[in-house]
Length: 114
Image (cartoon, rainbow, N blue to C red; front, side, top):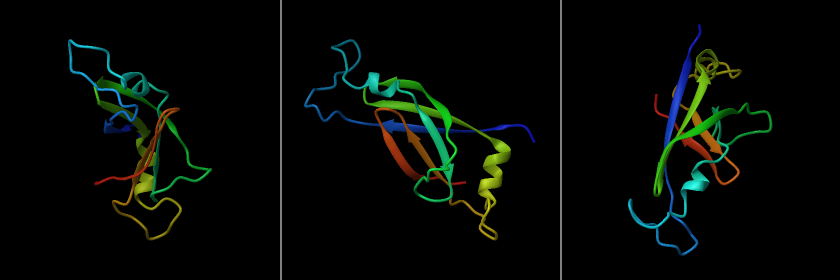
């Protein structure tokens, strides 16, 4: 089976530097540079990652002010294998977790609904 499972994460963040984030047509915002980072994504059956967790490249496909959309593409056959239980026998179901990271951000254990 050839295919891709695409996961998109809407990230909302606020600055802790005390700067005011303005709206369009106004002063520069403080966050977009951090959104355009070197995103990596992983799927796991647990809320944490291990040293052996495989990561794929992701990208910010949209960013505005305090919001960004991060897109990750996973090999469909691998994602289905993981969803069916991976190496754990008898453990299938919707308990997959998405993890995203960059040099600026680490977000782990987002539960996925299937």
